[in-house]
Length: 88
Image (cartoon, rainbow, N blue to C red; front, side, top):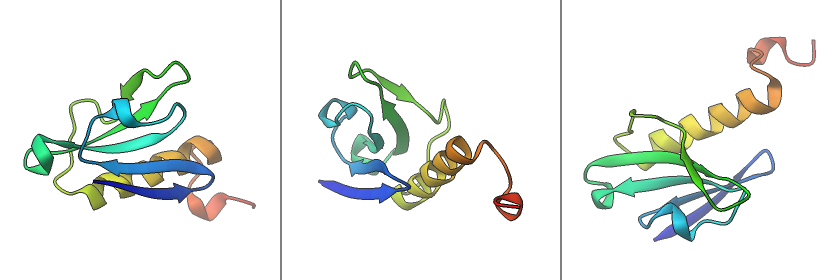
């Protein structure tokens, strides 16, 4: 299983496989134990190395992990400004 999403120009994948299947520069939501143990969020660097963005925090559903990843991308792009202050 691999589902593709795009958020603000960034490639996001939900996968039951490992991050090794993801292209450099992409973000992933990866199943832990087939999803039974939760979901992790990763970013694959230019050399193909995956960094766990959630640390030791895992998500109960893929949708929760995807929402976290979208918020994280928003913070990276907008420099951490709250949504109401953008373009002010």
